[in-house]
Length: 268
Length: 245
Ligand SMILES: Nc1ncnc2c1ncn2[C@@H]1O[C@H](COP(=O)(O)OP(=O)(O)OP(=O)(O)O)[C@@H](O)[C@H]1O
Ligand SMILES: [Mg+2]
Image 1 (cartoon, chains in turn blue, green):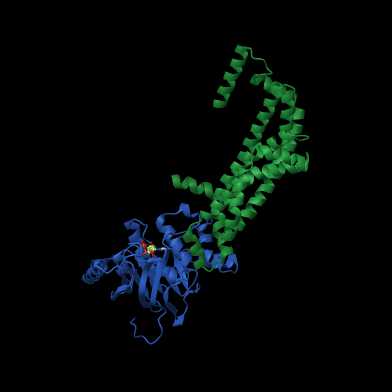
Image 2 (cartoon, chains in turn brown, red):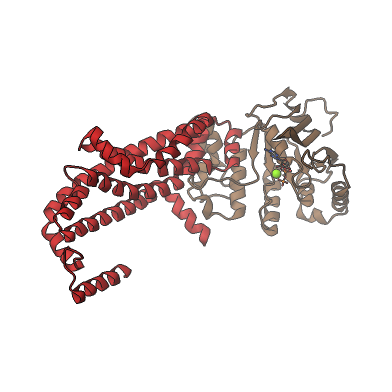
């Protein structure tokens, strides 16, 4: 799982730089030469302070924003600005109240074209694994927070894109549900060969779920640490009490809170 | 309840004070005389209803075309918004008689007055509704590969429907008033011209009977919009109810 693997990584972010124009000649640097990559089947976690540019980075990977500089590569091929490689799960669940859960989860396939029927059939086939059986015809507001997140994740993975981008999928959940969801995600993960990048604020979540954790600095974001997590899979909740886990946790915490060199805004 | 209490007070006051029925008839007299004149009142209600529906249909079509066009083109928004607002500063009182002169006593001036007073709230309601769409929802659709049209169909349109129905309710209330007003200025038939004629022959009771019918029409149409809303966006009321639990 290191950069020396002969094959091109599944996804590579290469020297991405981004700033937002604020008008009046001012600009706000948000991302500064960020590099990282993930191999096929690898689970990457990104942690960074709030507002450092994580969601912006995802928007660039998903082709929704243009970087000022740098490229995104999939299987060694530059794909900057292309939209068909990444399946994006945004910070909010964004399940639409006018669609049933099944219709919501099939949305990505429907939008891409092709028949509604096959789209819904593919989505429906994943309902048992996502613990959503029986809720196909429910509406989002009838579901608990955890179920809504699972539905949003289902909507993401069913698109069968090359890489999953998960932006704080459990950020809005209470800690009990959150732990359940982490355990559940790590379980479905182990039964699939998804390549995923997960944004989180939660250091323990990052260590528990990921093969590698990338730590970003405060805005403008740059990579402070790219830490492989060498814990056996399947991960158990009990590992959170292990010495190695604590060691990773401390290392990440220290890196995250190290006083940095945030470049001030144009507006100060 | 409140309505009943008010009517009772009214009835009592008229009976006790001996007010002339040409000035202020009692509710009882309005109902009696209105009932006797039911044939002619009904004959005048039908054209008013027809005008309301036709005018409002024209207005809705116009509102949808404009709002969708504006939603797709920032350039059109800048070009049309000032015109829309300007259309609302036209004093209908002054322009309605001119329309009679230009277009005669037929359907045309009524439809135009109704459209003029109703298309603005509906158009603005729709435009705002489209803009109420969650920005991130647009991004999600784009990440799925949706073009502007698909974003509109899958997200912007459904997001706008609750605002549309609110605007529809405001519009329909104005539509009835607009129809009556246009007829009052000049028409061959309809509740508006009926009121004008009865007023001129001092039949205050029949004027008020026609007013009562108008009020019933408005309330009826108002309720109809709720029924349509239930039918077309059943998820909306369910979601709202759920959020308050
Ligand atoms: N369109 C924009 N124009 C100007 N500034 C923007 C724009 N979008 C984001 N920003 C700024 O860029 C910075 C990074 O935003 P971003 O949403 O990527 O942060 P984040 O790391 O995802 O934060 P959080 O952890 O709170 O989700 C923020 O300071 C934000 O104000
Ligand atoms: Mg974010």
